[in-house]
Length: 319
Ligand code: NAD
Ligand code: UDP
Image 1 (spheres, rainbow, N blue to C red):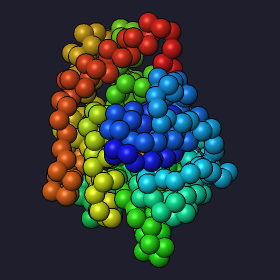
Image 2 (tube, protein in one colour; image 1 turned 45 degrees about the vertical axis):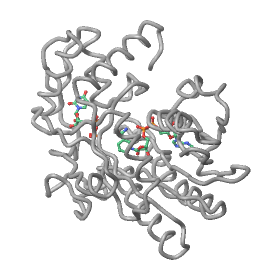
Image 3 (cartoon, helix red, strand yellow; image 1 turned 180 degrees about the horizontal axis):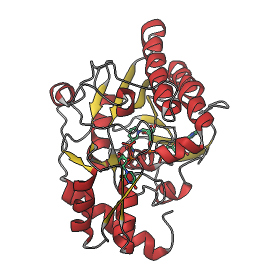
């Protein structure tokens, strides 16, 4: 990414802020974060403000998107991403996935830039094929409580392919599987901050349902490396980026307890409607086409994440 000019839509979010940081480390000439701070925060990029080439714009990308000057890449990471966030913000989620994505595609078209859309493993819904390969079309409830997110992301993939096929925009689609690390919000409701917060406070672990549902957790540094590799490739088809190490939520609670050295017993709460029963990426495409695979173990990633949450708890923020 040396010398490249990049816009990161959703740059003040968890993943977006790590991407901005990585691009600057790689020597990008210009990194513009565009964000309305709906679920992100300026705090996430405050440490980048003094870095040469970094700009931060406060814009709602559904209302219009304006970035002056040339761009080589547009990464679209803007969208509420945790089930609690998109349940609270269903219309905002549908609009940013549809109108916001189209504004991002138009920006890339005008600038002649490569457009990378952040999609999600959620487009596979409650998958009947396991592990999930990119040629699986998914099993999504189009009228359920998660539909505002899942269907907006499915639409954003379709729209991205239309702009590639009919307008000649150079596009990439990444299907991101559960990713964790520093700068997640302690109260965003996702299982990693939930369990880490509970472990640090010595509270019980709130496992939803019987805890046999599975997820596969990828450390943020690995994920960002996959995004950069995909952007630099010429792959138009969707690519899964995630860590194939799969575990049940009961096993995950125990892993957090061990890494944090604390936490109470496991208590069971009702399973949210349409919660996928299993999820594991097939990463053959990423391995073969991008030369990518995750390098950070769950133990190492949890250590980094826990130490960050300890630090922000000590500073009285992180929520
Ligand atoms: P996040 O909520 O931390 O970041 C999203 C950012 O988008 C926030 O800063 C938010 O303020 C911004 N945003 C939302 N609506 C906007 C709008 N209308 N205009 C401008 N900015 C807007 O979430 P995240 O975990 O960093 O996720 C980033 C992207 O990756 C999302 O598109 C999400 O769907 C995708 N993703 C993430 C995961 C994961 O595990 N973190 C998994 C799958 C997909
Ligand atoms: N989960 C849980 N306890 C919590 C929060 C989540 O058991 O306090 C479960 C949730 O039901 C799901 C898994 O953990 O099965 C992952 O949830 P998350 O919200 O992190 O992501 P997603 O469902 O989008 O994969």
